[in-house]
Amino acid sequence: MFQIGESVVFGRESGESTRGVIVKINAKTVGVRQDEPRGRYPVGTVWRVDPQLITRADGSPKAGDWVRFCGEPALIVSCPAGVVAEILTTSGRRVREVEVATLTPMAATLADIGAMISRIDYLLEPEIIAADGERSRSQQDALRRFYQTARSLLGFQ
Image 1 (cartoon, rainbow, N blue to C red):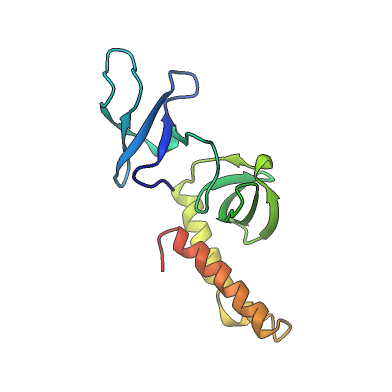
Image 2 (image 1 turned 90 degrees about the vertical axis):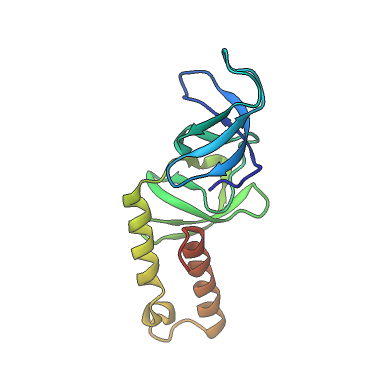
């Protein structure tokens, strides 16, 4: 997930890459103002770019980014130091202390997002959180916060 004012690089992997700044976020495209010359287009031109063709200028992942982990789509739920992340896979597996360098960035499909939302809703059910009384109250609260954070990163409260 990107934010307005964030420095990015856009373009196809096999084509020209251009640095820019996000100026607008639409439902399907992102408005990026270029910060360097690109062909015949002057600096300051605003491009409508597919989010799949954008990467952060510094390359660092943030909470809300989608990555591939062990061949499975996963959502970064927290990444406080930018080196180690806590992720949630679409199968519902919570993985802590994952080195960011081992993760492959990816663009999420609607199917990935739908699968993640339905998995989170299932994992938030009281009997799943409590594990039939096996988890302490503090463990239940921490797990509930983790799943609610993941859900809010997807744009659902």
